[in-house]
Length: 150
Image (cartoon, rainbow, N blue to C red; front, top):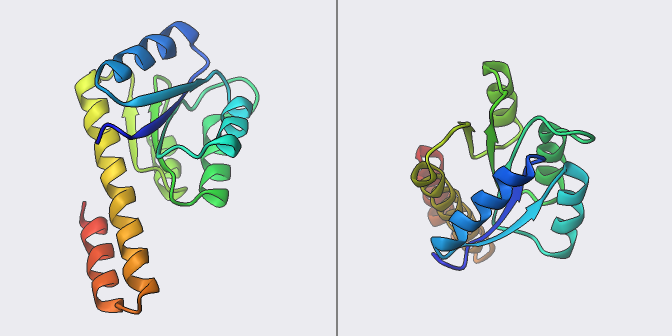
């Protein structure tokens, strides 16, 4: 799984730079955006597999970025990582398509497990689409059911 492309989006520069280094030490590819606008620009250049996204940022907040990402790039997996979220934010994030919702501080191991789980979810979704395109609807449904259960 070392080819996972991760985009980290957070306005706390020291935090996100440190997080990027720690992720790269685990042989995952990471890029950084310091706000929502920059994140959306970077995604148009290269679509990541997983986006780790803060909620509270100046300009476009994380929920707006999540909504725009899922609308334009529905397969991109998004993990919300916030220090200022609420139960309502979590419900909205999940409704908008977030794969996971984590609170800061989070252990790097937990975050890596979530990133790898999100990437596996992406792979399962793509496999289901391949089955569907080939006309094997039974296998496509089984794969989507497997993905939903996770």
